[in-house]
Each structure stands twice: as structure tokens, then as C-alpha cells.
Image (cartoon, rainbow over all chains, first blue to last red; front, top):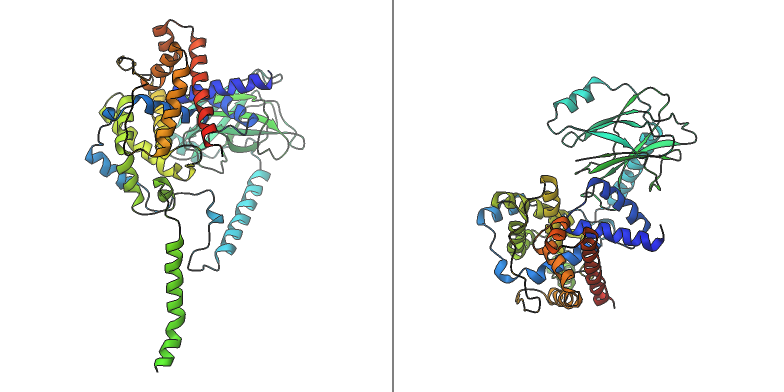
Length: 256
Length: 207
């Protein structure tokens, strides 16, 4: 497909997002297309739709919010500043906190080391302890989503399920039919499409290895909490994984 | 004694004066969402008072019933608090941003719950008619003007497809049946109409 055709495809998906919403497969497609056109924002056509609504939505259509609802909304609002992306570049507070830069640096070092440790201990289908299974069984919102092979040569037999509980922020994957990988050459990487967290970038679910032909069960090892995952995808990447995947998706599990 | 006191107080007084000057010099932002993002205590109530009717009205229009609309409004304002820092006045007016957040959440809720029947068909709205929103910002009025101008340049079936989709919440399939147009044509009309308006908005914001 030509770049122009790809851009048209992106606008198609964005228009669909702005009017009727996207099925999980289309969310995946949007993430891939946005990666090809970084100058386009996920809200690109949502803004146009919002302005158009104002054309038809006259003053006569407005009705005051019920008082009880107003009170409930205000009561639930956060009482402290919401997260700001540029917080670290803000001008210093009037009262100097001399230890702040050291605390920030120490935190960053710890996060980096934790990330490296977690990344350097890939899951290899370790036996899942009863506690994770029990946690998932006990959670009311635990759901299972089936892996569907995406027609990539060598992975036609890929299947299984991914089990996830938002309330526990825990889950596991059952996989079979994935060829074993040589960790020195290639590792599997899990991705989660969670548009409410970030419509453009999927969440990195970490790398894992498959050492043999038998089915494996792998606990999820996520560094970020998920809000409302719409789809999961598995790719094959360089050892250690990547920040941005070029695909292809070997298997996809959608949240219906 | 007086000299000693003066020497002690001077640094404190100077610090107080510097802080007061700093406060006078700090810019007073007109964006309610920026005030929320900066943690101003009164900003939350100000946002709810300013945009509550808009959010509630959109939610009523796109929800199955009032109870569903109330739940949706809670979700929408939660989204607004967490997205307050994303608002960029150089891209769109605050009202448009709030409307966008509201629509996003409502479309998502509708999709998860399954589509409700399309709202009752309304008479076609004369887009040349004025909508006087005296509290609306100059930016919003300008955006609406641009949208109207670009909408008027579209063919009638394109205008109707956009109105049925955005104002009446019809699915593409429903629009296809109502206008007796192929589904692909409906999608194309909507895509081109939205793209045209978005590009016009971007040109307006160019220096």
C-alpha cells in the first residue's frame, strides 16, 4: 500500500473512532497507523466532530445538570494537582526543597534498575503458583480472551488464551503452538492496546521465551497498570525487546 | 534595639515582598482546565459550573436513559480531570476539548453496551441559522463559524451523513439505509467532511 493509501487508511480509522468508536481489531490497526504518521494525533478528527456538534447543538438543547449529580461530580474530583507531563520542568517552588533533585534521581535509578532486572529475567513458562490462579479465580472481573493466529508463516498453530483481571492488575497467558525461541537471537514480546491510557502507544507487556513445544503458562509482568485493555498482541523482537514494535503481530487476543 | 529589630526583620520583609511581587507577576490563566491541572482548589467547581450543562446535555442525547447519562457524566468528568493537562489552546477551544472528551467517553460506553436505536429523526437543521452562545469564547465562535462554512461547501448528502452520524448518533449502516447510499460512500463522506473541517481549524491556528 502506498504512503498516501496508508494515510487514507489512517483517516478512515480516525473518522470511525470519532463517530462510532473502534472494535478492538481496529484499535490495533490505529496504533500501527499512528506509528507511521507521528505528526497525526489520535484525536485529530474527534476535534472536528466536537466542533460540528456545536453547529447543530443549539443553546435550546442545553439543560442544567441536576444538583445531586453536580455535587457527586465535585465530591469525586481529585483534591490535588493532576499529573502534568512537564512537572519536572516547572519553575522551583518558593520554598526550596534541596533534596528534591536527589530524590528524583534516586527514583529514576531505581525504576531503571527494576526495569532491567525484570527484563533480564524473562518468563520461561514457569509453573504458576496457586496464589495467582487463586487471585484470578476470586476476582469478579477476571476474563479470558482467546489468542488468534494472524497468519504469519510458522505461527499458524499459535493459540491459547490470556486471562486478565483489572481489579487485581494481574493475569497470565496460556500459549501453545508458538515455536521455541533462542533468547540470544529473538524473544517474544507482549503488547497491550489500552486507548484510555494512551491511544497511540501500546503498553509494553514485557518479553518472554518459549523453550519447547509443550504448552506453557506465563504470568503477566506489567510495569504499568492497565485501565481498559482492548486488545493484546504478541510479536517477535530482538533480545530484550523493543520500545516500538514494527510487527507483525503473531497472535492477537481482543477484548469483546 | 530598634536597629537590632530592623536588621532582623529586613530579610523577612524582603522575602515577603519578593513573594508578593512574584504572585502579581505570575500570569492569570483564563483556561479552567489549566487551573485544574495546576491544582487550584476552586478550579474543579468552576469547570463543573461552566461545562456541566454542556456535558449533561450531550450525555442525555447519547445515552439510553437518565440513569445511564448520570453514570456517563461521572466518567466524563473523571476523564476531564485526568486529561486536563493535555488541553492545548493553540489546537482548539476549551469548550471543543470538553465536548471531545465527552463524546469519546459516550461513544465508548455505547460501543461496550451495544448500540441503542438511533435517536428520533429530527427536522434538518438550518446550518445557516445562528447559534448565539453569549458565554462562548471568541475561539469557539470562530471554530463553529469555520465548521459551518466548510459544512455548507459539502454536497447535501455529505452534510446529511455528518449530521446523522454526529448529531443523531446513527451508525454508518443506519445512515447507509436512510440515505440509500453504499456503506463505503457513507464512510467516505464522513471522513472527507471531518478531514476538511479539521484542516480548516488547523489553518486558522497557523501563525
